[in-house]
Amino acid sequence: MCRGALLCLEIRGTIKQRGRVHSDTAVAPSRESGNKRKALNHELSKLFNEMWDMDVNRFTPGKDYAIELQGKADAVQQGDSAVRDSAARHLFHYVNEERLKNTKTFATFISLLDNYETSTGVEEVVTPEEIAENNCFLDAILMTGVMKLAHQYLVKKKLAKPNLVDFKYQLYDIWFQLYPRKEGDRPDSCGFEHVFVGETRHGKQILGLHNWVQFYLQEKHKQIDYKGYIARKNKTRPDRDDQVLSIQFSWKGSVKPIGSNFIGVSPEFEFALYTIIFLLSEERVTRETVKIEEYELQIVVCRHGRHIGTAYPVLLNTNNED
Image (cartoon, rainbow, N blue to C red):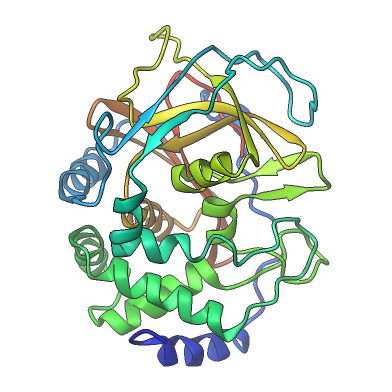
C-alpha cells in the first residue's frame, strides 16, 4: 500500500457519511455548445498555457506516439449501431508503452482503469485495494508541477486550502466519490469513471470516455473501433500532430457520434484543468472558452451535486456530445 493510502481509506469512510448527493444527473447539452459562446477567458488561458508548458510528462507526437487519422467520419445520431467505417486501421499507430509504464502518473492512472463496472445502473463495489490505487494516483499527480500550479491558483482564489492533505481530500471527493447517475439508482458512477474510463447506458449510448490513454488501451485490446475524424469547419482535416481531436468510434456495441479528447497530455494536466473549472463555478454546466497553444477550446464541465458529472474539451467550430 503506497504512502497515504491509509489516509484515503479513512477519507472514504468519512465521505460516505456526509450529506446525500444531489439527484440530478449531469448532462452536457451538446446543442448549446456552439450557440452561446462565451468570450475568451484570458486569465484561464494564461494559466492553462503555463500548465501546458509545465507538463513534462506530456507525450510528443511523432516521437512518443503516432496516429493515423484516415477518413472523415459520417454524420450519425446517438444510438445508431450501424455506421460507415472511414478508418480501416487503428487511430493509434504507435505509443511508447515503456514511457507509459515508467512515468508514475501514467502508471498509477492506468491501474485505475479496470476498477469500474461501465454499465450505468449497476452498483459499484470499491475494494480497499482500489481505494489504495486511487490514493497512489493522487499522491503521484500532487507531486507534479502542473498540479502544484493548479493548487496555488485555487488557494489564491480561496477555493482550496493550502494544506496538501486537505486538497487531496477535496480531489478525492470531487472525482472518486460514488453517486447515482440516474435518480433512484444505487451509486453506480463517479467523475473519474465517466470522464476517463467511459460508461454505457442501456447498451445504446456511450457516456464520457474522453481520455486518450484509455482509448489507446481499449483499441489495442480490440474493444474500440475508430470510425474516423470530425473536421473543424475552418480546417478540412486535422494534422497528425494535433493534440486535441474530435473523433467517432464504437465501443461495447454502441457508437459515439462525436467524442473530444486531448491527445498525449498527462493525466495530471486534464485533472488540473477540469478541477479548476469545476471549482470556479457552481453552475450545473460550465463552459469556458480558452486558447491553449493553437487550440481555441470550450472546456465543458458539468457538476453532479458537489462532484464532477462530466468534463471534456470542445474544439470550437465543431459540435460535441456528452
